[in-house]
Length: 196
Figure (cartoon, rainbow, N blue to C red):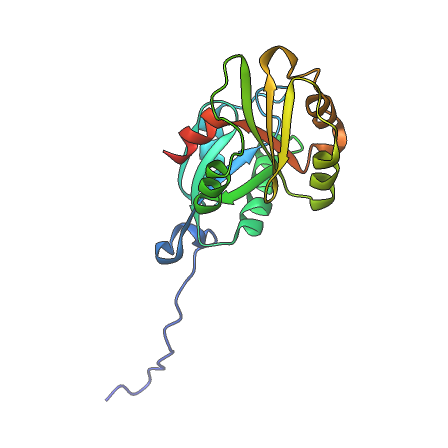
């Protein structure tokens, strides 16, 4: 009946940015950019959202101007980190470092904050640390008189007097260049906004 025709099996075509297409397996991630809009690297969050969307991430939303991004991906956290860093480096020409957590992990981190969350005259922080050896180093530091430190799962919980943040033991240590690629700090108010 169909003489002269060759029938080939249908092969689905997958877009290069297939992360945005497979919504049935999507995970919602928080992506924390390190050192953005605080120390020489100035990025507009609308541009960050555009670049990450073009990189194949879905439902990209930025929170505040301090490098907090929510996005969906079918990939695991390691692949999201690699893809986001590459996209940001290519688009903005800086040494981009990000830390990535699914929202379930982030809720647990926030819920496990070991100190009183609101203390007059103090900042309540969570430092996210992707390198276990560096987390060990930070957790072993003797906190200063106006700070408290406690190790969590992949994080360092930190509370410090507002007037002593940069001069504190933890503040001075984390300001060192060697911690750039593996740490980023957020206050609890920022985490609350990310988790809303």
